[in-house]
Image (cartoon, rainbow, N blue to C red; front, top):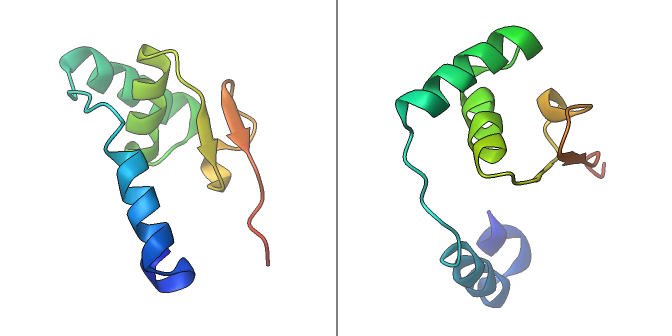
Length: 81
């Protein structure tokens, strides 16, 4: 998506930033947290896994996804139309 919308240079920079991240195992603990969060916040399962993983790592989520709007430790910003 970055390549299409911003060009090759920005896509390469985005790729370099992504390689700095961690890969987090979807453990039983995170899976159970995700299931609880899915029910509590009426989140799709993928979103609840993201939220549970972020909370397990004490991370902040930056998102334009309306499902995350209003949740703790989420920096939500509306999409530009």
